[in-house]
Length: 198
Image (cartoon, rainbow, N blue to C red; front, side):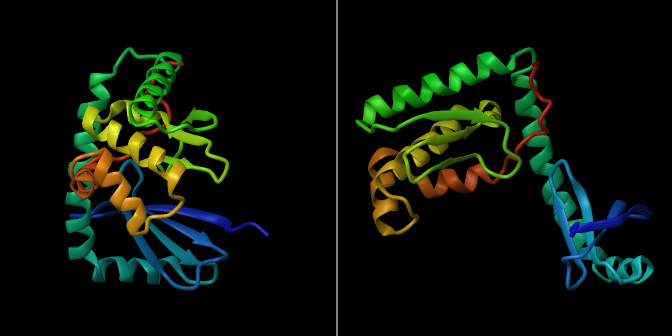
């Protein structure tokens, strides 16, 4: 059964801007998300009238405006970084990230299995139970210290497949102030998938 049925509808609201309403067979209640490069999306249960969902949007107007301002800053930070890699092609970006991961692994004596670089919509990186490391090609837009932080974070998962105290203790040995870097990472978003040349 499809999770989204028939309808998507865009509505302009004064002071808010464009809001996209999406009907979903899985949704049990109306929910609002405000995300970089996606905008304001309202998920609506299949049988719920979009007009009523619009009233919900108006009640949440102040919250939406505050979130949109925060998200706008993240988008601008990311666009500024995207400008710094204009002209870079996908193959070169992949080679650069793989090389950096290899350098960091050698520095810290961490042996991983394989590395995959692709565009992921929601994650900067991950490490599998088989010690395969997945890198989001979007890391190439980040400042060097944050790109390194993500790569070292995933290398640490080769030793600790969780985010418990042992993981953070290990990461503390490999990178200075990892939790602060994690906060800084939140100032950037994953760009749309066409930000590099093919």
